[in-house]
Image 1 (cartoon, rainbow, N blue to C red):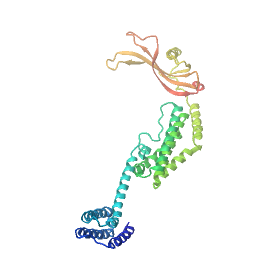
Image 2: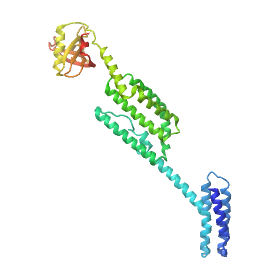
Image 3: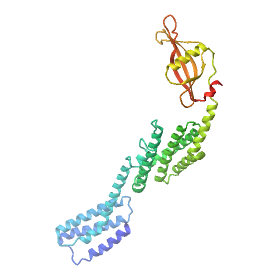
Image 4: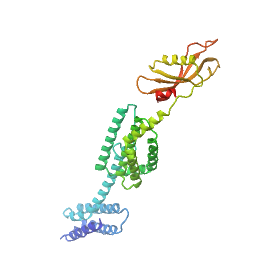
Length: 366
């Protein structure tokens, strides 16, 4: 600003001093004060003060005040050339204030859901939030990432000022992100169900979108770019989604081949019939393939407070075939109610759990 403004001052000073007339006696005192302030402005302008713009604006305002007094004392005197001498300092301060206010506005905008806060710090950004309906979950996440990309594009095109609001947050997340990538890498090697693979793949796609946005907003953060590269490489591992699904299918087949029923503790045709009757009474419309009794004796169940006998139970592993799909292996417990002098001859389900929700029916006899 110095070279330009000092040049203007020299020009305007020449213009002012070259006027053919001086102010009248009533105005001359303010004219002289004005020129003194102009000299002060020149000196301060050469000092490179840290608050230079503010200091020069104060002096310029003081100079303009002297001109107001001059105009009142000598209305005929032309003060326009004198005003032009100090206006650059006034305009410079106005520009500084405007720039400061814009920085505040930009930072404030980025605290909203449309700003970098919405990209990185909102409750929902790019993560996969499944609700249990596989097809709908995938479709919803695709739309979510599409909207995320549109938000990023808007910021890149129109609102890069103020993105520093989220920079420290992103910097603090890189370590956690690296850990998450390694965790996902390990998960990929363990999953066997196709839906689980799809959900994990979508989750990692979301992470890729997140860190892609971060690297574009903060290209100077090398750690952010490194995290994004890690995620891209992970997505390409084993040929991507299709490769993941293929390997998961192979792991599943291997697990099914090597899953067997627990060995029977006893063989008792009569007790097996009790289990069969209780199982079929549940109305699950499944055909029993094999029953292996897991307990040798009845277990007495008592009231936890009084100690009174309630019933007795036995447990078995039951493999059953639904109408479609593979078999299912249950841990099935039956009970016989205590009658006061003995036990009911009718058995019913006491509890059950699933030992394997997918089981090769042919393994039931192995």
